[in-house]
Amino acid sequence: MIDCHYLEPTTVSEACALLAEHGDGAKVVAGGQQMSLLLRNGLIQPSHLISIQHVSGLEDIAESADGVTIGAKVTLNRLIGVDNAHPTLRALSRAVEDVADQQIRNFATLGGAICEAHPASDINVVLSTLNASVKLVSASGERVVSIDDFVTDAFATAVRPGELLTEVVVPSFDLTSAAAAYRRFVLRAGDYSVVGVGTFVSLDGAGSCQDVRIVVGNCSGTPAQAQEAEGRLKGHNIVGNNALADAGDLAAAHVAPSGDPMASSEYKIDLVNVLTREALAEAVALATG
Image 1 (cartoon, rainbow, N blue to C red):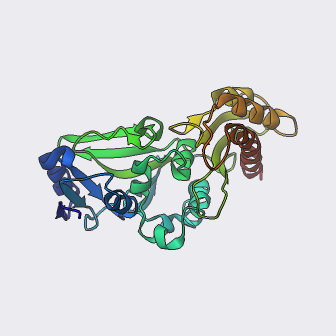
Image 2 (tube, helix red, strand yellow; image 1 turned 90 degrees about the horizontal axis):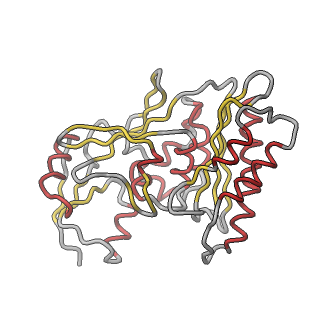
């Protein structure tokens, strides 16, 4: 039996005040997909559940000169096709299409998916690829944290006591010369990824790589940036040569995943190589198309 108090604030400030009042025993719930599993299996026993379902201002998607801001309560289903209005979110939109199933996506929220910090999260890999950040608000103020610093380990985040994640910010980039792509491998549709790789490339007119990010998911506790592979590409021409294959090799050499029931360590390493090449090729094609 679940024995806890259920609270329904209507503003961010009220939610933060309740978090501060009830301390570590309080847990935030939005769509409730992951929370319901944790409660049902007795993995957490909160003294208070603070629902942000009726908190206004957390369900907007807006664009500014700095990028696209996505409210923490935006459901995953709303992100499908969001690139029609916000093209820089193409990789995120495509990744979300394959997360779980439609019924779950109708309730699961972006903020909840991020805070779960699952090692196989497609969403956190894509957000890291896009160099996104999150805003955390508390009764004492607010701070902005990059997604790379926010996810600290498997199922662990940098959220401090009393803080509420309110929005995600994805920086803008020049769509005529830069693009992001995401590739994943799953055993069954809707499953967590065995491995996922996100890539971002920015090119000049001659095909030289001005900026690049390669992020690997589910090979460690957090999304891992393949910096050696990035170094092979940055500052070099990467169109019509072996650069992408070299980057795939280097990304695979960068990871040391543990085997699990889905795949052996060796198989995951092979997947990193292949998926890195594919995601880079897609990003380059989009950036030059």
